[in-house]
Length: 270
Image 1 (cartoon, rainbow, N blue to C red):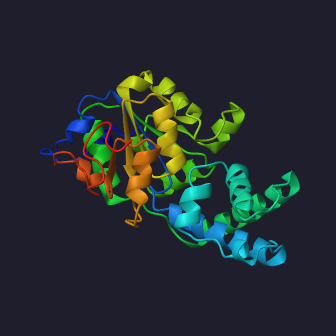
Image 2: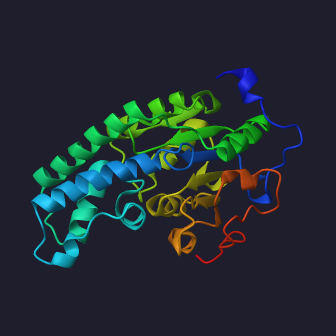
């Protein structure tokens, strides 16, 4: 950890009330800390559309292309690659045979890795501002992700040193942690921080992720709606978010930080 960086932040920054009493914060990586969800979605689209063209479902409607917003959020966002691949194939009426799932997941991984080599992925400025405000108050921070690339992404975005611990896809596999919506990944993160879940917050952009936070008994579950699409904020609330914002900078220097207007506090629209 870089002490100078950890202390960075605006002296006048204040946290939204929803975060003032939490003793630790766990953040998902893709779409919350780094602008990498779009890269995941693009890789999934190419992998799925290629597979659907080669193996069209009997029902022509089910052979429609992968939607980078709706299908991504509903079936693959926040999940381990095999789980996401299987969920999407089932949605298109296809049998998620183990060999098929491995084929699609491997193709997606190859495409995603290639895209990362070609395009830099940055951290969201609003997220960085929140991280620095939390660090100034001595709040322990963890990054948690189903992706094995999380450490690489955080390093490239120059924010890895703002976190006290990282639980990524490699660690999840080593510890045999089930994927979201099971809360095991988040619970491992707060265990490493030495804080019980009911005194910590989870910040997620995936439906499976906010559901995991709710199942894990976290004091605060904050959903991030980067899409600003119709119904996305409401869906995050239904799956377990107490509050939804469009940018995490809204939680610094403001009141409640309800950027979407879809959540006004704990228990809203659950």
